[in-house]
Length: 464
Image (cartoon, rainbow, N blue to C red):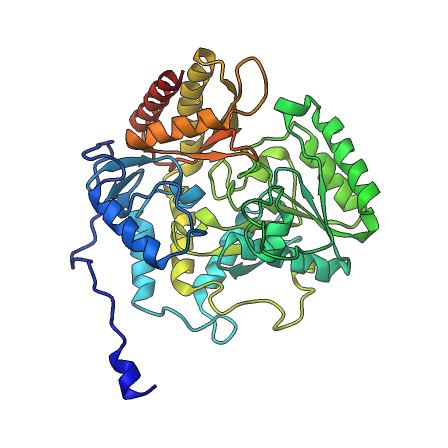
């Protein structure tokens, strides 16, 4: 680089004030400006000049700090976060133990690359995952590969299943969401916006009907028979490497399958040498009241995928599978530069410890009781709410045209917009954006949950 070219480079002006980290945030909703406020609007104008519109934000308020269930924007609004970074901050924003563990590791080693010179925190995360994955025992151990994101977990789960079976085919379910990479966006049920216009999609992917009790009215056995018949016809069991299933679908609308559906699919996979992969990226890590949601369906998966909530806000993902499957890959065939970063691993160890120390499984069940009851009251009051569904702190309401099961995304948008102006952050889901999903921190208090219900009540009433 020449001296002249150096002189043309200007460093961006920092607007960050030096201060000590602030983790004391009152757990109360407080709106002091319009949302978004003036400072958020200023930052948003700068953002539009340097960040493409494809990187879309649900609500353009810019966050200054957060703790537990409250996020504070740059204008001083205290907003109840019922999204948790789409299921990431399950143990709460800036959990003290997670921050302390990550900080301690940050002061030791930030990176060496585990496949070059390894470190213990990676091993400890793998030990925790092996301990908690359904079916893992001393006689039938599970092993773990760590990566960075949910999409990378899915990519590697498919890669490992193909290596183990020697087969190409990948089966997924309707309404599924698995990521935004080339392979995972091809696996999604909804092409727009995730795959639309980005070129050829990956092949050897077969989409089959799932169990959607509100709409199909089928028992678990009936829905499974339909799924299996479809896959045997369009793919052929002998060509399938894996079936990738979200036990509770996330972006698809928090769809909980009918009893017996997943066990029947797992049994069919086992009988045909197909690797059963549980995508627990959104439903896992204690959110549903068990460490992994698949536990509640009586299924022992061959591979479990985890991400999002595993490291309390730091990027980390796990692919945990039966040893004979994971050991099939040759040395050097798995890994990545940042996969299993030591700081993220230290945070993940703290998350596992907090799940036990704070009995967060019981807290998820508390949220289902308290918040589920509140949502039930709204469903009884407003005919547009067709169903309250989910498990633990992974709940949703499906919003329809009253008297039908037709989706009502317009009403969903109105409710979410109203709630945002009142300081409650919500998010839609479903292939028609017909559902509102709730992913609160497991530390969200009963008072905050009831406050969210009251704002939802106001929102539905205002939209009537």
